[in-house]
Image (cartoon, rainbow, N blue to C red; front, side, top):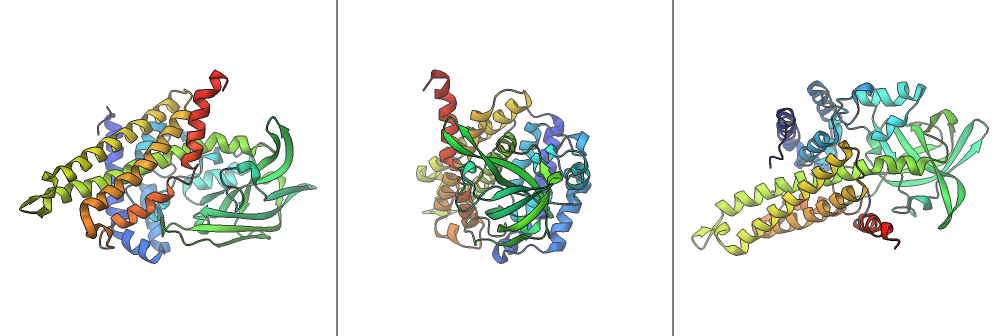
Length: 386
């Protein structure tokens, strides 16, 4: 769809789409089958992305990034959503939360991440703390000029490929209107720090080549200089940046849904049964009509939320709506595409079964569908005192 994009935005969309089709598509099946990304392939993707000027395109120019606005960056993420996450992760979008780096942290973490010299991962989730971030049990105890971390994180995306991890840990407790809650602090922790170990995670049905890891901390001593932001203010810091990741999920879901739809549309026009294309039957053509309507609606929701961010308008509910609708839309679209293909849609010769599996996790990570509905409903009801 053409949303009235500028010529520059159209060029960016075409460039990123071309990159995904030529640099990502050819390697997807092997990577997803083996669960392994060759280091030289990862380095090549990163190198070409840097040459194109897209690396760290989510960062402002003052930090060395491309300085894209939210709408344009969302368009980039939408195109990257067409490809395997195991490979598009090396396209390079460091965690925006690194903008909270100060002083020496900028030289050690922020700027190398923006230049593509170091990669990061974000560690919040724990076995007993998923949606309830304040329920985390990983602790960081102040000890002189250091903090001593103990505990476990899991489901940490691509930590196995990261040079350092942004880790959130409980550093105290406070009374709130809803009872006693943990105080949270964010830390920058380098791979290889004594007491910190990155372990193999779980084998997932979704994004098989995109690994999750378990992190273990056993009396891991971290200097106070590696606190990201302010002590005890990690919850606010996370909330400030997590909404952007939810918008990314919405955008990638739209991109992947369009790829799936294009396949289903072509197949419906070419595949013949009973002497005519299956798309001539309303049982198939109506599916296509519903699919494209939902995809376009998710696209509009997502770009509208990005526009609100650019306009400095409140956007928490709009981003939650985009993430909720786009992730659930993707599940419906992939399922219908397989139905149109019939038995062939479930075979590994095509990527549809992979897209179908991958769609399942989108309703869970970066805030479950239930959390998004909570955000939306509270935004509607709170002003009315309910």
